[in-house]
Length: 96
Image (cartoon, rainbow, N blue to C red; front, side, top):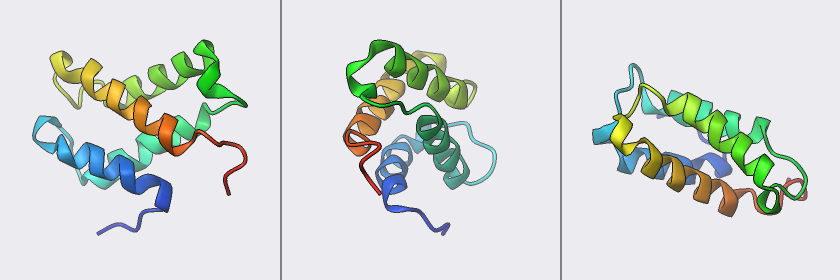
């Protein structure tokens, strides 16, 4: 199993719980790393309070998930990933 950082574990749990929906070539861990990287790349100060920052994260995650999950399920999983990001990175940039 790939080593995960603490902040990646919840995203792994979320994506692996939806693994039957995913059309991923290669290990799911690669998708976890790319989703988390796309979230972190778009974090801004007070991002949870700014709709434009939240929209940038949604778009980045959507690009990572597009083609890897049925279109009909994309919005549901995207919502869950963004909610997880809000929980995990709510204190960004104060977190270590």
